[in-house]
Length: 300
Ligand SMILES: C[C@@](CO)(OP(=O)(O)O)[C@H](O)COP(=O)(O)OP(=O)(O)OC[C@H]1O[C@@H](n2ccc(N)nc2=O)[C@H](O)[C@@H]1O
Ligand SMILES: Nc1ncnc2c1ncn2[C@@H]1O[C@H](COP(=O)(O)OP(=O)(O)O)[C@@H](O)[C@H]1O
Image 1 (cartoon, rainbow, N blue to C red):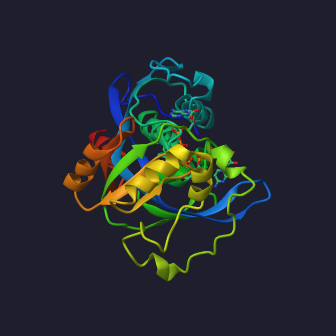
Image 2: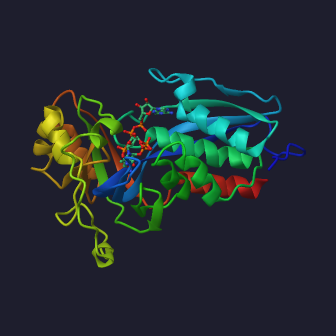
């Protein structure tokens, strides 16, 4: 496929795209594949807390990241990897200048890197006029990370497989206090641990007939292991559950605490022990990226 550059409405315009975080309302590990990847049953919900990416499509062919991220080499940065992948698959002659306002903590289980990759794929598909379908973009995204497809899909979903087999589902859009203990946990470290539970029974479909997934019918299989290895996470979770239902997201280290209003979440935030970074956000069943893409598509 070759992307069109003639009469491209978007060329040389700096356009902002949101790159939201996700939380895993639960995360069950139901098996392991031959290649080492784990089969999951997890529920992804977006939150209204996002990085912002600004992209300018150019007639020159270079892919430039104007705002490198501290601690991440440009060649390893999922923003650059996603742009290079789409350029390669589409054979476009166009290039792009990208900058990011990064507010999502890294290595926290909020999926920021995967979300950045997904936003770049979806945004450049429009700006370079590549016309890949969402499912084609998801397959490309999966080669960058297991979490990328959910951000391309754009709707809260029950995920199976490595996290890429998605069924849209609408959990309640609760308010969350999201806290980050002072440690960063690598996804690989958790998934290679010998004592990680790997055989949780698959859910009956009827178990999903609810809108509240932060209760005792569901859990996060990575949590017990992380609590054992990281006392900072154990201490914070023990404190939070005294107030409201709380659970780790992904492979950690962030923890979310569920409330029905902003005020309740904010009032617990004010009581947090010193030194814990935190923010309050609402669950969203639709990614804010979808609305921006829909609006821009109309303006073409
Ligand atoms: C488990 C989740 C839940 O959302 O955790 P977080 O990273 O968000 O905490 C994600 O699926 C992570 O997705 P992502 O971070 O994109 O994973 P990848 O880059 O593909 O893989 C990182 C490492 O995790 C392991 N991995 C990942 C996903 C999976 N279903 N099984 C695995 O075993 C792989 O061994 C790989 O070496
Ligand atoms: N654009 C990016 N933003 C964040 N992390 C990135 C990015 N590109 C590569 N990474 C790498 O991915 C790792 C995981 O980041 P992130 O997706 O934010 O966390 P998690 O997978 O725990 O949700 C980071 O520690 C970093 O080394």
